[in-house]
Amino acid sequence: MKIFVPVERLDGEPRVAVTPDTVKKFIGLGCAVSVETGAGAGAHISDAAFADAGAKIAKTSKQAAKAADIVLKVLRPTPEEAKGYKKGALVVGILDPYSNMAGLKALAKAGVSAFAMELMPRITRAQSMDVLSSQSNLAGYKAVIDAAAEFDRAMPMMMTAAGTIAPARVFIMGAGVAGLQAIATARRLGAIVSATDVRAVAAEQVESLGATFVMVESDDEDGGQTAGGYAKEMSDDYKARQAELVAETIKKQDIVICTALIPGRPAPTLVSKAMVESMKPGSIVVDLAVERGGNCPLSKPGKVVVHKDVTIMGHVNVAGRLAVDASNLYARNLFNFLSPMFEGTNGKFKIDWEDETVTGTALMRDGKLIHPLLKASNKE
Image (cartoon, rainbow, N blue to C red; front, side, top):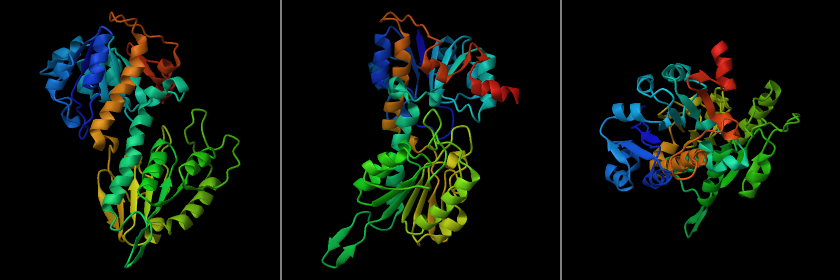
């Protein structure tokens, strides 16, 4: 099997889909690996490091892409890239099926099989393949570090001869992977931390990290989560009660970190303009959901804005701002997903199309849309 890893074409993407370590592992399975020159530059991995691991360095992507049986990507390929893929090739990456139908149609036209890693089912066996978890974990950490760098006060309580400095108060909205890491990081920095989530099950996790859980009680039997473990869309009554509770809580906070996302939908608005204006001067809002519309209507993708002396941070691709670690984890996710499909070490490759990790992530097979999500969108 020939594997190709191109330079990421979308702006602002420094991550790479393989590392020298995973190159060696793929070669150990009998694969030939080609890496486009400069593909690892954003993650500080040189062409020489890939070559030392056994990869062939491709000066351009055209020939290598056309010959590849498997193309490993971080973000979705552009339509122009898709045109250059071999019919029947496998394309694996974070393919953004919810808002990239035009790009996916280009992949379908190319006749490839495409796997969206962000749709990996949340089952025990797939934990090591879960790119949302690996990347969100880093994003949650980085959100707190970004906020602390912008904050013009100390995070922990400090007792000095001149007096005592009170600890910062940090409120985390959304207790998924990113939120939980944000809680842990803020606690390590000495802040007083509270958090909220629509899922009742999150309370135990939040409290185990030393934070206070703030939640509106829901009458839903499912506890505010989908069968896959993600937060679900809540009723208008719940949203109204949640907004009231959040409004009172936010007034007391120094830093608010928003992480709430609902798969397939725009990010829910959690921090209104009025709530921002109620915050203390010098407070910080970090909106990790800004690329999906934002949890705060004042956040701007890729911008840090100030509104009524409150700083609102809307950095995009936050995990990518830790490109070295993000690439290492993502590359392992891809290897863990693909390696069970190899039969021994002779390069023989077979996809079990009934496997749960395959059915959950496969968007198309040989150009034919097969994922329920895409079938529904294609009919609209």
